[in-house]
Length: 380
Image 1 (cartoon, rainbow, N blue to C red):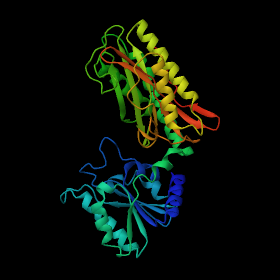
Image 2 (image 1 turned 30 degrees about the horizontal axis):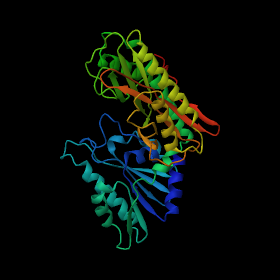
Image 3 (image 1 turned 45 degrees about the vertical axis):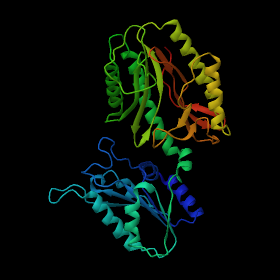
């Protein structure tokens, strides 16, 4: 499970003379181990204790989690380069002290290794001061601590075969959600009614609880770029933007379509046609060697040339263990696309308080260009 990701990390740390490292970002934990804490509880729920952490040393990765996750991490514990260390979380015999038990587990593990010299990498600098203090108790003064925030993000951009399988499963769920949305959109229905139908269909298809984001907004909202579904009811010919992301197996999907309750107006049809063509144009620019900011520039020019307001958000972004990750398709970004990246593209235009259209697909960068990974119907 996720052994290729760990091998990439091992090679990176070795190249930078970091002999040991402690990873704390939830995205790094998922990417390195495949373990994803249930989002409904959150990693810092008082019954859980502290967040999952991964200690790296000599090519081996040790996952620290509370005993509440013992079953979910059993597979990782069987990996040749993986070990799981659990600590007590919930008990009725004493006050809740999961975070303290985590610190004790780290101290005990550090005491066993007791590095005398070398460099130790720490992730999430803003929350790791107490962990650094605990590690210093079991290390010598010759040990150098370095912060490694952001080191794994470039590695995460190119997906492994295992990751692509998880992403495809998520995109299949958003396809289910959009098919349901198309049937549910009708005059008299509220945003929350449509959202509830979509979420139910996705969870039925998955056979389990699945967190769902992002937007479900009628066109007559003044801020109609995005937002949570509320009690706004659709009137005849109202547009609604539905942007769906699922979180399954620790990986995110993304997707968007715009629907109309009944017959679309001539204006809506014209806008939708322009955004459809903008998405097709954006997709044609995807290839290894393409520069993110150049794609962004050309797609924005496409919308502007059609005479519509240019969207104020990104043209696209990567997706994986987080819903938005590198490479970002934005004006400042010089990153070059590589084979194996998964890119979301989402051109749009908005008329506040009237209507708006956003369309979004996912693409896998291939040697020949790009493969579409989302297959929802984006017609009006």
